[in-house]
Length: 222
Image 1: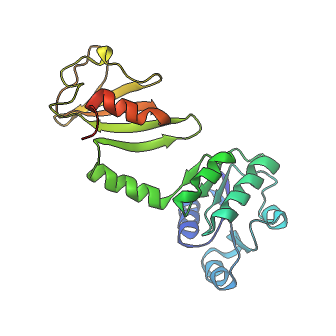
Image 2: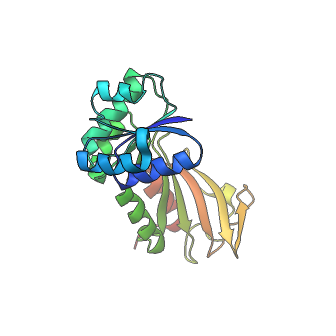
């Protein structure tokens, strides 16, 4: 695989190092002269100096081939958005993954069709929410292109779903229970599966219907 990594900070350098160790071909772009000098000592000709938002720099990196993967992981969300757009729309790169530094900017990436994004802040908050869920439902994964979310629900004794068969539950349209984790084991959910208190239920639900799914399984928030 050939990959272009835009941004030579900790994220970019670690990803580049890992990809090279896996035997992939990589070109990394870094603009800052001090950082470029350090990266050149380690990576040699793998790293080039330039502004990755400029087409001339991207073409020096080989984006016209095109690469199988472009990673826009600079510390600037606007730059990452521009780089991803150029890669996908101008050069037909099928997979462009962008780093989102400020989760408030996620909507701009979504509106412009950059759906493969990584946000450290959101990921950390997701881990915190998993440990201390506010309303018994935790979003594990957002499938933005499909408009779906993978969620985990902790069923309690007084939940409306407790003791009922999965096939008899009135779930939001487009939702589906996938599995339950109970007594240290995971079981796939069938229509005859009885949801029990203490179950951790994994489900797929349209992103706008998570609150409705929560009410169907757990009742209204207290």
